[in-house]
Length: 320
Image: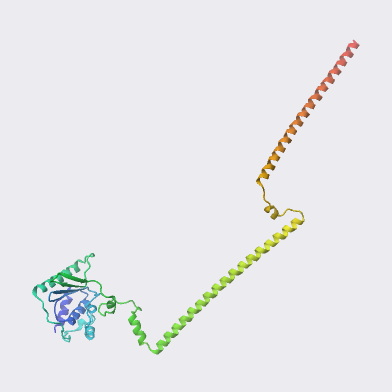
């Protein structure tokens, strides 16, 4: 009945500790208040030898609305974070159906200390320490069960803490509901648009196919032109060779097709060198013979001159 006072106190707080056992719907109202103020909610509950700690971050993900099934949908909508601060009282809460608790003092004390420990870890914010959103501890056996990852589908459907999606992006459920609520005209328009899109796709495929066919045709034509050109060149060369052969001129094909024997080449070169040597020797002998004949002629001239000189001497003696 004094909900407005709770709201004012919560506005001045850094955290909300909730241990009031009034039922799940009251816990949902406190959860909506914490999300609206963007502060953490840490609540604890005890039953028999069991302790349950819920640690909800300022942005939820998950929150008590995600984690609890069977809540009254009308009440869930009434306690939404956008509306929860508007009430002066929330005495319209559904009655609490929880069974009578079987707790004790030491169990509640342990629960309170664990809640304080969670808040200190929240303040320290150690990156190496990951806090679970829920822990269930059995005091008689010392066993504890932490919960770290909530069901993603529940997070997406949550109206309290689900993150807003970018504009234009919708979930599969929203798309299906929109299709089911669409009028016959909208369905006809959607079918027409699908048909148009299909026609455009087919037209694009036809254009692409025709372009490919044109490319193939141009390639084939170029290949045919090249082959025809090569054949014409071969015919021209053969005609030229025939004409040259009829005129007695060696053709390029005959010269290129003749095979050269390397041994014959070496023999011909050797013969040429031997012939050169013989010609050189003959020239040398000829020159020597010419020199000898020149010397002989010179000696004969000298003898003739000597004889002429002797005759002159004789003539002089006769005169004397």
